[in-house]
Image 1 (cartoon, rainbow, N blue to C red):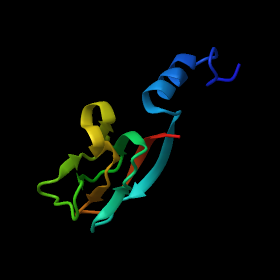
Image 2 (cartoon, rainbow, N blue to C red):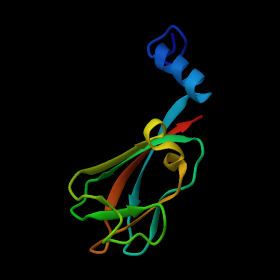
Image 3 (tube, rainbow, N blue to C red):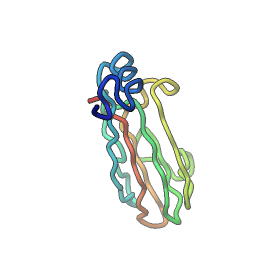
Length: 118
């Protein structure tokens, strides 16, 4: 049986996603280069039910839902493995909102993984 088919491996997760979210959930990954000016990290997407950001660079990144993010008051995504996650069950509709980032010291790359209802 197919991996995501009812009765196959992952069948419960597939059926749960169908009932809970009205469709299958798929990951979308990419790498974003954060500029020293405001950089859009996530687009507004009402189909997104979760996301994770991982900063594998050596520079801190500041994040905010409004722009421009302020390096002194925004959410810190720490250097060298800092991680931030948002899921709809805990964070509500903010999980679907735009998110912006800035790095005042360099132009680091961060790994972005979104979970989208297909």
